[in-house]
Length: 281
Image (cartoon, rainbow, N blue to C red; front, side, top):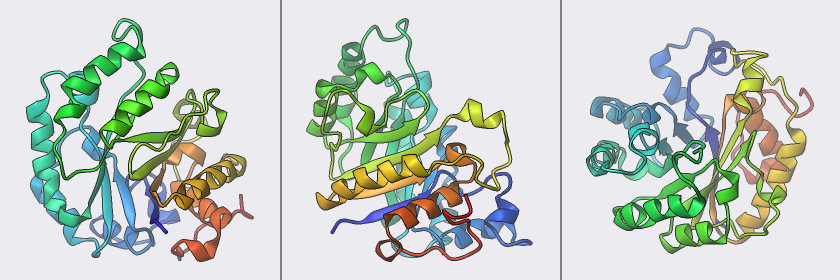
C-alpha cells in the first residue's frame, strides 16, 4: 500500500513548549525531537520568505533519513505577484530548498480568496495558472495547489491539475466545502499523492485562545469523515500527506493523535509522549 504520513503545520507554536516538547528542551532541539514523533512537517515560515540556505541545511541535519519536509511557496508568488513575473522568485526558492535533497517533499502554492476585482471567474484564474505557470513548472518536484474560491472547484479545474500531475490540496477550512460536502462529485485526486490540510476557522478559534497547548474544539466527527475518505484514497495506492494546524481544534499534535486512533493505531506509526487521546477530548 502507499504511504500515509501525518504531521503539523510548523513545528513550533505558543504553548507547545510545555504540552508537546519536554520542559527545559532548548528551542534549537525542537525539530530533532519533533522528528522522533512524526515523519513529516509542513513548513509555514517559507510562506513569508525564502529561508536562508544555512537554515535549510540545519533542517536537513536535524532530521533522520526518510523524513519529509513539505513547504509553502513564498507569498510573493501566490499573493503579491499572483503568478506574474515571478519566475526568478520561484527559481530562487527551489534552489534553496534543494538543500533538503531527498527529504524535500511537496511544495504548496497556497492561494487566498480572490474577489471579482482580481479574477472575474475561475476560468480567468485558470487562464493564468495553466499557460503562464503550470506548463513551466520544473520537473523533479511534487507540487500542490490550494484555492479558497469554492465556485472554482469544478471538473475543468481538477482536470487541468491532473494534466500536469499537480495535487489539489484537500482542506478543512471555514468557508470551503469538505470533499464529502461538494455537490458535484468530482475525483479530487489529481496526482500520485494527495495533500491534506486541517485548517479550521482561524478567526473563531483565536477569539477563544492564542495559546495552542490543548484541544478546545471537538473535531472527532470531522476527522471520522476524513478517515473514511482517506481510507478510500489509500486503497487507490495514492500517497497521503496530512497536516494539522493548531487552528483546527486548538492543539495540532492532539488532532494527529485523534486521527491516528480513528484510523487504527496499528496502521500508522505510533506517537509516544504525553499526548491527549480521543477519550480526553
